[in-house]
Amino acid sequence: MRHLVIFLIVFGGFVVLTANAQYMGNISNIQPEGSFPLEHRTGSIQPLDYPFELKSQQYANFPAEDLSILFLDVFEDSRCPIDVTCVWEGRVGLRFDISTGHGVEMTMDTFGNNITNVFDKYQIQLIDVKPYSSSRNTINIEDYVAILKVTKDNSISDSGNLGTKIPSPLKQFRSGIPIEQIQCRDGLELVIKASNSSPACLRPQSIVVLLIRGWGMQGNELIFDMSAGQRESSVLVKEIFSDHISGLNFMEYPVARDEGFPILLHVGETASNGCTVEMTLLRINDKTATFLKKEYPDRPCPICLSEDTVIDTPNGPVNVMKLKEGMDIFTQDAHGNKYIGTILATGKTTVSPDHKMVHIVLTDDRDLYGSPNHPTTEGTVLGELQAGDNLDGSTIKFAETIQYNGTYTYDILPSGSTGYYWANKILIKSTLD
Image 1 (cartoon, rainbow, N blue to C red):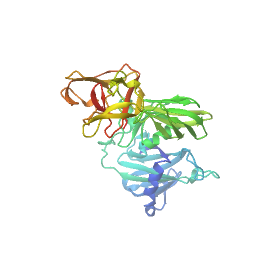
Image 2 (cartoon, rainbow, N blue to C red; image 1 turned 135 degrees about the horizontal axis):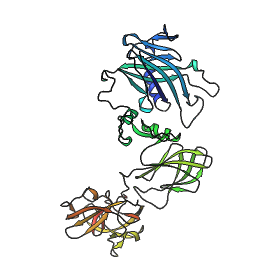
Image 3 (cartoon, rainbow, N blue to C red; image 1 turned 120 degrees about the horizontal axis):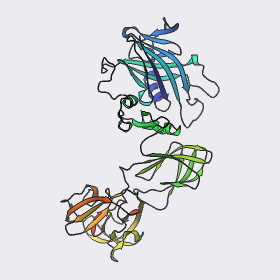
Image 4 (cartoon, helix red, strand yellow; image 1 turned 90 degrees about the vertical axis):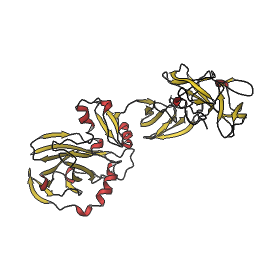
C-alpha cells in the first residue's frame, strides 16, 4: 500500500469563499458513512468528482480506485472567530494519510497554490473545514469536519509525474532549478520564505497576508520600521494608530509635486508614488509601523528631462530647473500653430544612481537628453527611437542610452490642449497632462 502524508492549508481570505460556492451546490451528493475497518477507525465509501465530508480520525475509501484518505489531525487553526472582526482571516492546517497500492511512502508540500494536490492519478481538493469557532467557544479535535473532493486526472503519467503541468515550487527547487527561475501557474506569484529560503506560489491577494505575518519576501523588496515624523520614498508617517497610520504621500507621476497629499493607510493597504515604488503597511506595533517597500525598475516615472535642458520661452531659452508655475512659455495648438502659453505645473523627480537617459541627435545637430518613457509628439517615446526615424521634422542621426549623472529629472505642463513645448529646440510632449 502506498502512503502519502499530505498537509493542506486553507486561507480564510480566498480558499474558503471559493470552496463554499462549490460545496453548497453539491450538498445533496454527500454519501452516507459506512463501517470499514482501517486501523480500527470508521469510514465511508465515496465516489469521485463529488464533495464529501470527512470527520477527524475517520477515513474515506474509493474501492474502485484502490484509494483511501484518512483524516489524521488538525495541527493549526488560526481562523478569525465568526463573531470577531480581524485584520487577517487566519488559516487552518490539516494532516491526511493518503494511500494506494504501490508500496511507496512520501510527503507532499501543499502550501499556497497546492490547495489542490496531485497524488498518483488523483487531484485532491480541500474545499472547506467546519466548524468555525467563536469568541465564546473552542473546537474539540473530534468535532472537525473536512470537506474534500477527489477527481481523476488523466493528464498525469503512470509514473506519477505531471505531464506538461508545472511541478510544485518545492519540487522545482529540489530538482536543482535556481530559485529565481522557478515557474508558477497562471495567476500565481513566487514568494520566498524568509526563514529557510523555500519557495511557494501564491495568489497576489494572499502575499500581503503572509508578509504581514512575517512569512516571506519576493524579489526587490525591503521590510523596515518607521516612526511618526519619518519618511521613506513617497510616504511620510505623521501619526500611528492601533490599526492605521495617517500621513502624506508624495506623487511622482502623473504630476510630480514637492508637497504631499493626505493619506490614511490601514494594515494591508498600499500607497505608491505612481510608478516605481509601492509602500505596503504590514503591521503596527505600539508606535512603530512596519512597511514593505517594493520597487519596479521596469516602470520608471516618465518625468524625465535632464537638468541641463533649456526650454523655449518668449524671454529666450530658460533652464528647465528655473521654470515655475505661471511663467510664459511657447507651446503649439492642435493645428500646429505656435503661441504663448502659461506653465500650469512643474515636475521634479529624484533619480536612482543607475538611472539611464536616451540621447537623441538629429541630422540638423539638435539634441536632447530624456528618460526612455518621455513621449514625443509623434505618439512614440524616446526609448523607441532609432537612427533614421523622424523627430520634429528632422531625421535622427543616432540614439543611444547612457548613464545619467544628475540628481533629478524635470518636466513641465504648458497650458492648451496639446501639452507640447520645445526642449533644446525639439518639440516634445509633456508627461504631466
